[in-house]
Image (cartoon, rainbow, N blue to C red):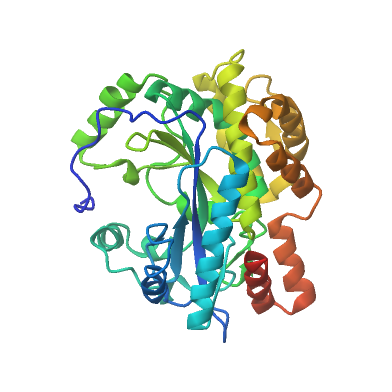
Length: 379
């Protein structure tokens, strides 16, 4: 059965939001500083953080070694970055009090899923009963980015228009090369864990909100397979109660700045897509989706993309450079140029997955990977 702690209904409306506003969620690792394994400290962290000014921006995740931080709604890169840095500093201070570490990264390099403990919340317990060991294997760490939309139709247009850019975000954020102590040879192995769940992958190709609600969501609800949008683990999903789309495929980057840069990139890209509709999305765009997604997960920025409309292959990194050039004229109105400049700088540096591999090879093995991730997050 599905978790019964969520409302047995779905909203038959799409809440209005200001177009192109931003919000970010980051799932973080809590680290034992003696053995550098994960530690079940989320309850203690939350008790400390509830006494600070960021109460409400930090919540538990499915297992006790995870913590999720949430931004409020922002209009521009600089304000989002500023708030995320403030929350990061508060979380690090709380962790210092408990003598534990905090870091990003899409997976912990050597934790064992069987050691994890499910957080004592009704929904998390219900998910554990439903999914068995997969619930503990869900101790992976991602960044979710929300973009405000003025209507459900706009949300679905953006959701499907973004399909060819999903590999950009996978590759740029990729920070999960290690799982259970082994180098997976993937830059983003985290998504392999998520793919085990039903309703992962991409949303069905529907462009009208009324049809999406009545012909898909209502019918799916009648089957008993879902009871809320939370049961849908799509790479991008609409959030009607917030009036947003939610991009869910990024690993949690090692740094807060990269998290804000990725959100900025998505914001400008969405503005470009809304104002540049020469090639609207079609169902056949998804013929190359799984292949492009795999290339980004496996090879990161060195992967190859097949363009969904021309079927031409292009190096993923080259496609990002070309996209940034195309969307740059749309950045000024969003005060987003500093974020795009920072993105170009990131493209010139080793990606997070390569950085972690270098730490493993040259700084002393898997514990060195975790120490480096802690340092990166705190800087």
